[in-house]
Structure formats: C-alpha cells, structure tokens
Image (cartoon, rainbow, N blue to C red; front, side, top):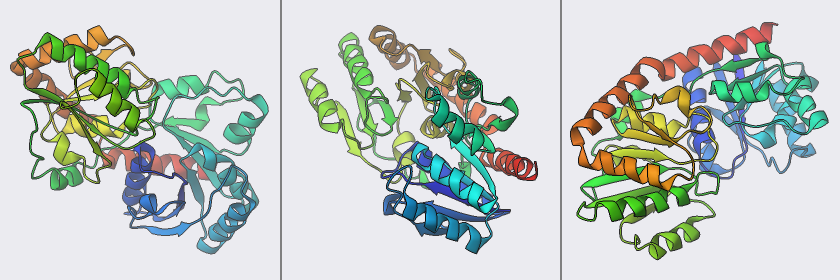
Length: 354
C-alpha cells in the first residue's frame, strides 16, 4: 500500500515517536511518506517526506499542498496523528477519494457534537487507538461505530533499544527513579517531585535521586518546586535527550504520573530495560501493568502511596529485580514492533477495501 503519515507537532514527544516507529516499520512492506511541520520531527524519519506549514485546523494552503502530494504519490491511506491534522487529512482524503484513518493515543471525550461527528465519523474511515480505555471513551458518543475503531498496542523496537542502550549512562545515585515526557501539567511531574521528596524524608540514608528527561513550558516551575522542597541537588533535569535508553538502562524505577495517558512508549521501553514501572492509573496503563506483578499503579495525587512504593522498592532489591524481570517478559510477549506493524497494515487494508 501507499501510506502517508501526517504529524504537525512543534516538538518531539510520544506521538512523534509512535509515528516514526510506524513509518519505519510499515516501510519494510509498503511505500510510506511523511508530512511534517518542524525539522525536530522530520529529521528523525528516513522515509520520503514533505514539510508543510500546517498552521491551523483549516489551513487552505496546506490543504492544497496535501491534495497535490496525495495525487502525485498515489496515496491510498492517510494517517493523521495529531488532533490539529485530523480535519485537514479528512478533507484531503474526501477530495482525493482515499482512506483516512486517525490515530489517537489519549483518552478524549467528544463533546462538540457537530464538529466531532464531522471529524471522527463523517471524514474518518477508521481510528487506531492504543488502549481499550480510549476506545470505550470514544464509544460514549452516539455517532461512533465500534467496527471503525481498532485497538493496536504500541510496539517496542527491541533491536534499536539494544543497540542504543549501551553503554548505560553513568548512574548519578545508588537508587535512581527516572521519568520521560514533555514537561506539562498533564504529565504530572509536580506530583512525582512531591512524592519523591516525601520518599527522601522516609529514607534519609538512601543515596537516591530523580532523573527527569524532557523539555516543556513547566520546566522552570518544576525546578523551583524541587528547590523549595530541598531536592534541588537530587532532581536532575536532563532536558530533551535524543537517546533516553542509556538513562533507562541505569535506572531502577520508571515512573509515569500523568493525569491522562494511553499506553506511553517510554513506559514500554523502560520495562524492556528492566525498570520497575510505577504509574498513575490513567488511560490504558491498567491494560499494561498488573498491579504488584509486573509493576505498580497509584491514583493521581496520592503522594503518600507513591512515596511508600518508592520506599518499599528501595529497601527490597530482590523484589525490585523480580518485578523488573516480569516487566521485560510482558513487553517481549505482547508489545513488539512486528505485531504493531502487522495489525496496522491489516486494519488499513480492511478499511481501504470496505
């Protein structure tokens, strides 16, 4: 098939990582193209690509260029991966008579009846989501149809991780908690920092630290919070890192404390590298983590519970190692890039033929 992925992000994040993995894996058996907005995204892709302005939901110049690309390259399926791209891709698909499959990686209630019916139903031939919870939320809208929604779990490129994780980053503390993501309110890094500070009070003799990978608008605020809690020297902000695997390979726990998630790529990758996953019970994390078996779940805002988990794991390395091995097995059995590629291809073919 001839497939065009579209991503108009200004920065690199989980959706961009998924788009890149999908493009590169699909390209082994299909002809794949990318439309992107910023070079920080486009430079990561080796497939043929086009840079467009993508200034708004209804950017007529971008729509005109998108239609020309579709016709020039004989595109059969377009897959927009950012919310701002959905309308443009849908309109271009209808103008050109091709299949439009949205990709959604976060829970989202469809609360604007006319607009959301247009974007998610009238102009969309299918929707790929990465968690059952996301599908359930979409189906609360009366115009959504179950057969158009396909749950396809994110895949992990284990070969790339093995290549890039060595040598591991130097371990800055004896016990390291790591996290990765854009520094925004939704990602809940403030909850993580407060919990870490409470944990540090419980085990003052432990040489423990928190490594936060990522950039974002809340960085200064989070740095100030760390300092105000007396954790300025124990919370490391790395900024954006091209290769997070070296840091994951030298950390003990990987924490995701988001208010809303699908199933984040970073969590899957850290589990493969034998980090104990600790996550808020947000979005699809409950489909990934079996509490107490291959990781741990907490409610957002429960700093006492999260701090207690960190304390127990810091004091019990045998338990930590057992959970970490189980986490890695979970990834190798259920979340490979090969499985993701096959399921995306099959869904695209089915929706294109229907």
